[in-house]
Image (cartoon, rainbow, N blue to C red; front, side, top):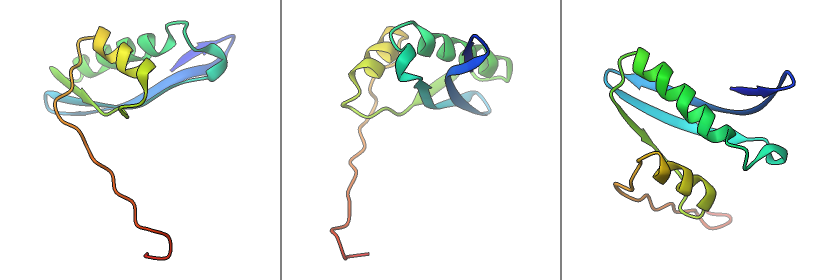
Length: 93
């Protein structure tokens, strides 16, 4: 978590399983975006995960989230595969 003036402004979640770490739900307060907070969250999660034994990382991001895609590319992440989501039509559940 990144705080500014004592208030949380960005955060994320990391899960380590052996040498593999998954990074999830990286978020920034919209009022504080474009200040490097998500990059700081990613760095903190990576340091923590590395200390827990992780040597490889993965994450998921929606393909229309251009800011996140740009950040993750700049950190060395690359697309490995894509998910396709489906939704039941109304009244079909």
